[in-house]
Image (cartoon, rainbow, N blue to C red; front, side):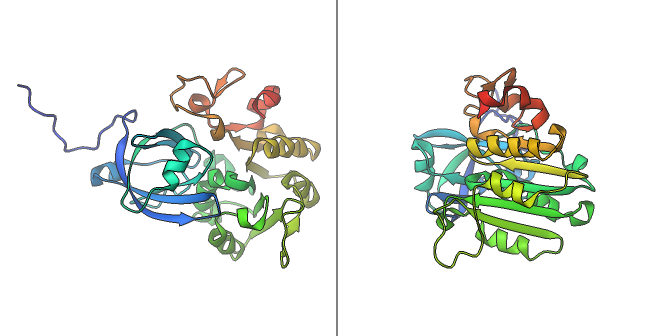
Length: 288
């Protein structure tokens, strides 16, 4: 009988789910929860690394799996975080998990945001709803290397005040030098005492009129928001190479097998999920 393989190194196979435990759960909004996960095998945790913009597949035994962007900072060791909006069977099952629950993790997959190319530039992060989860890892990475970048602006919108996520982060970011946080709610979503703006994200972006020179814009949100944000950036004179988005919401299997994320000549999971506007401009209507 052949002997069992030695287990002195982390498993290199990223196609097999690695067992992890839910360490913490945080309610971000009425339908969004953030999971903090740690691999059961410490060697797996030590061997896991990722870059802002990459994603994983989370699986719940008996329920299935789905793709989620990694929302934690890559420099933070010992855990990873994903924020999950309740929209279907798998996400409903994830929302039912408790600390100590077991999940499977595949990945990380995909490309990442071009952090090196952003050095020295002013950065605008334009997000809507749960789309801020896809940008959070990048924002945390940039804040941890603050001296390498210019002015930072976070424009974030949601349907209502109850739908805003990462409130503690937003407050912390606003208090940092050289960082401007602008919050906006959809018309009709504001309540008494709301002190932020009221208006859809693309319209507010045009009102703020960011300078195009030495500026990179990174955006993620509901498809309709991204589409109109890209159009607004066009009108403001941004070169499509200056604009970056992530299309992680289009993915399913993460391996380029199911075809769900095929847009134009691209497979989002294999060619992305991070793209410049220049890469997708020719078939934006097929995506959004």
